[in-house]
Amino acid sequence: MQENHTLLDSITSFFVPIHKDGYKFVAAFAVGALLLSWASEPLGWVGAAATLWCAYFFRDPERFPPEGKDLVIAPADGRISAIEEVVPPKELDLDGEKRIRISIFLSVFDVHINRAPVTGKITKIVYVPGKFLNAELDKASEENERQSLTLEMANGTKIGCVQIAGLIARRIVTFVQQGVTLDAGDRFGLIRFGSRTDIYLPPGTKPAVRIGQTAIGGETVLADTGPGKSKS
Image 1 (cartoon, helix red, strand yellow):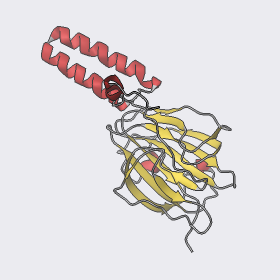
Image 2 (cartoon, helix red, strand yellow):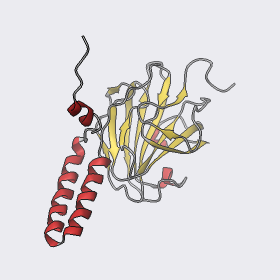
Image 3 (cartoon, helix red, strand yellow):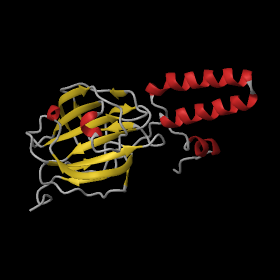
Image 4 (cartoon, helix red, strand yellow):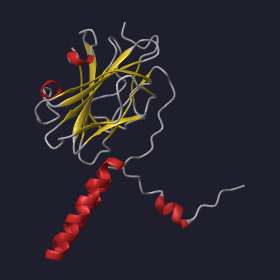
């Protein structure tokens, strides 16, 4: 039997749920908009627009990760800003061997929910205080405030994922704890108001994306760590 689809269903399908972490911010913006409207109608409209933007910022859409136990999926929405071979930060405990780092820059208009890049157990979570430089700078990976996670896949392969604060981002939020096992695409945190997320691939793994490409968190394939997919 064909499912009935009403006009209301069509309208509501355009609205994306807001993550609960954003409720207090949206409420604060709304109160501010109300106060501004009492002072001046034009200012009230500015406040209303800011409130809508805040709700948009904290949107939390459903994502559908591609199947494949060896795939590394984008942990965040945004632009691939850098792909380079570097030694990972010490706190990730990745043996100090050079790996490909894929950096995803999140503008204030991107979805800011972070998602697990692989199915695996979180073996380390480390918060590192630091600066709030432009997140697109190379040195932001080492100098900015960040939260680092190491995930170990079923075959023992380890992936590093780092949430990095930026010029506007001043708060990194993590929803999970060390020792928890996540499925690829599971939500593990967010960064408020613009930021960057780095992924450290296993040694020798080829990236499947290019600089400038737009990534969709929980869906875009960054690499395949399966047999025969590494560099010769």
